[in-house]
Length: 328
Image (cartoon, rainbow, N blue to C red; front, side):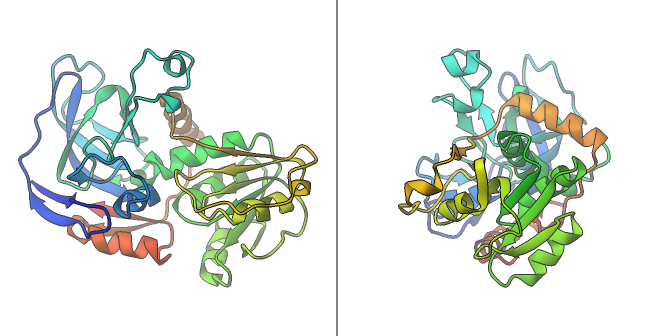
């Protein structure tokens, strides 16, 4: 099978002809049809996430058809369409797993990081961590839902009942969250790279009430802000823009250093928190919500062999929505 392989962080992925994997007990083998290109993939490829199992097949926004089942598989059968997210395995026995917070399991393994990902024609995945995909989404359109959508959903929940919500960084996750938030009657303020008028127009199209550069202040104080841009300098900027009692949610898995800031930005019971990974419950809730509130995904399909081009465009901010690799 064709796979795009990461041999060492900082180097381009290489095309490799690998054996088709054999599913183990409890595993599904998927014929991959689409795999989203996530900023987390970029952090792994660039060496900012430091625990990959190399050589590695990246990709954790996977959509495919079940091609074969290992022993003891009970939830899916050959021909089923399923999605594979970032969270690929947890221990099930630690305090976090037992307490409904498996996203914090210290032994967790992640798709496209410690487990084989979807930048390939086939992959295997633990059926317990796979999700059926709502029928209304084509394969390519569904792929970003598996991480950008799920992490965005968890970040939105972390923002609480905020009626005035800021989104810093308007990419794959933010363009989904903006639609969810607007459909819930929230006022969305979208912050892009300074002078990125195309992204600002896109945000307004998806329901943002106000758009501007990340160097601008919103027209009124916000109840919460979600940072999808991995830029630590935006933390004090967002704190200065939320009202007393407001929350700044850092939704990325990696962020550049946060500069020192004066306590008055935090005072007034403002808070800063992060979002880590996802739980299977997040997935169940999110995909059930999509049956009621259809969300449009903006995607740019590219052939699997152009994975390096997709990562380069993401790194340079030259994507609107999400890049998705296809195997057809």
